[in-house]
Image (cartoon, rainbow, N blue to C red; front, side):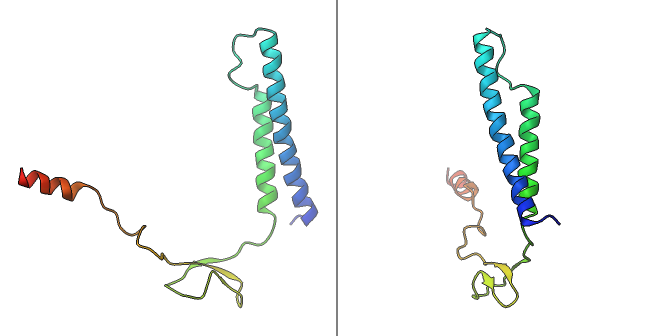
Length: 116
């Protein structure tokens, strides 16, 4: 596993690549407009590759940043979001019924159809 500085270096290099690809794309478009090139709507392929590489480096740098915590659903427990004794994260149960109920207008439309 990489060290902490190695992880931050990967993320920093990824961000710098994304920023450089932004500058490169803007520079390309300004040169293309000055040269009256017909199609400047899509970026050059090297910019696309650079953005993808920067994204992958940022992703890998952030995934290596530390240990993952176990997440489990609590069965209505009122213990709070983190149990300090075990160091695990507990997802709270739904406090409202917003996610449990699914209603549409079918009942209203059926009643209106019966009455008319």
